[in-house]
Image 1 (cartoon, rainbow, N blue to C red):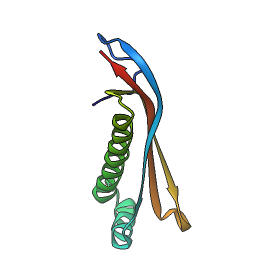
Image 2 (image 1 turned 30 degrees about the vertical axis):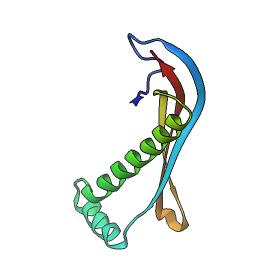
Image 3 (image 1 turned 120 degrees about the vertical axis):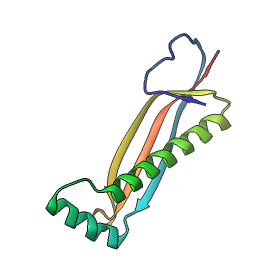
Image 4 (image 1 turned 180 degrees about the vertical axis):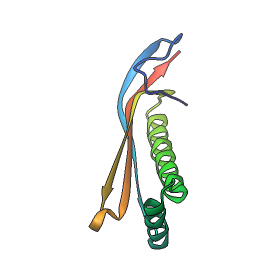
Length: 106
């Protein structure tokens, strides 16, 4: 399934707009990963463990959005937007939402 942040697909014609679709995921942060990320923040550098968790959350949200679109008969999702939020006590969890418009393209 084609997924794009643009409102249309170059060289393709949207023949039907099906509607809004979304996928969400919430992932908890690991306590030890938090400690090591905090140390890395103090001494500088990137937090590879957090980047990996963020990437996994994004991929899961997009996958769920694609599955929902496919269940409605779509073959593409256009205008995709990704939102990131921390939730839970002390922001201990990461929520990623992917949303877009399910369409049929030819």
